Picture 1 (cartoon, protein in one colour):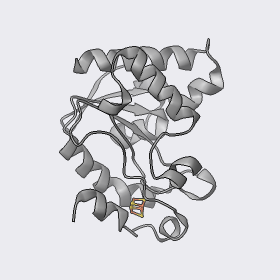
Picture 2 (cartoon, rainbow, N blue to C red; picture 1 turned 180 degrees about the vertical axis):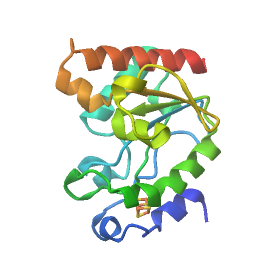
Picture 3 (cartoon, rainbow, N blue to C red; picture 1 turned 60 degrees about the horizontal axis):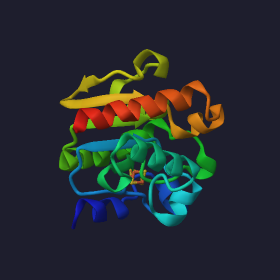
Picture 4 (tube, helix red, strand yellow; picture 1 turned 90 degrees about the horizontal axis):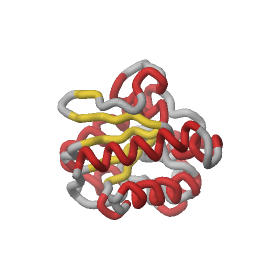
Length: 180
Ligand code: SF4
């Protein structure tokens, strides 16, 4: 059974497994220089089985393309593979349950750089912190080079001229330069 098949069969979080439509394993190539990590699937991701397919995903695609690396060459995944009901914040237990899957994915993908989107994904790597304290810098974490930045949803909320959009664009450009 492949790693993806094992994840699709996972029921470690009974509440999530009971209501999910899909286990959103991730998208992209089997090995990737750049991996982008978000928090958890939303409604559209649960419907389609693919990560970052809504407005946030469209913005991510656009900014990656602007930076010179098409989304098709980037592995995109979430720290949690199943949608929490009503998009609530994942519990500590759920995050811990799913952690070995994400770790296994990263080991297979073997990226040069991991970009985390939003606070939750940053904390998955760096522990309790704030985005302000860690964003836009590369951190060495257990052999991975991790670059935290804003979530595209925050960039959309801040508008095209807002600080989160500017930072997200710059950080993705930096990440693409690092893996070039
Ligand atoms: S969130 Fe992760 S650990 Fe929990 S049921 Fe889904 S795949 Fe399994």
